[in-house]
Length: 65
Image (cartoon, rainbow, N blue to C red; front, side, top):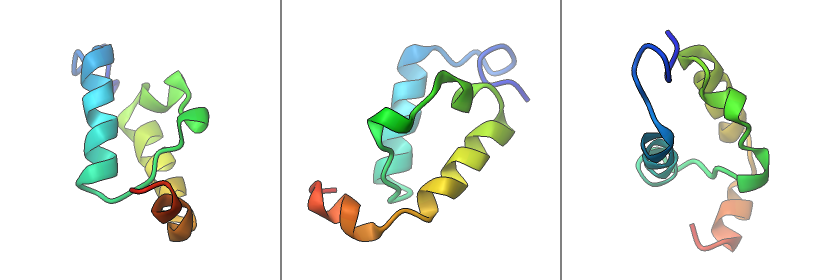
């Protein structure tokens, strides 16, 4: 499923999704690693989120997350 075309996610909704991933799912989303292609499909978003789980939790703690 394509996030933009099928679910009509716009840029504001994508920012809200990033905030949700960080706050509710407790995953650190580094700004420099977010590529627009991450939000093409549900699968590409899940692949990206799986990479976030492997990040060192101390990195997020150092940034006050």
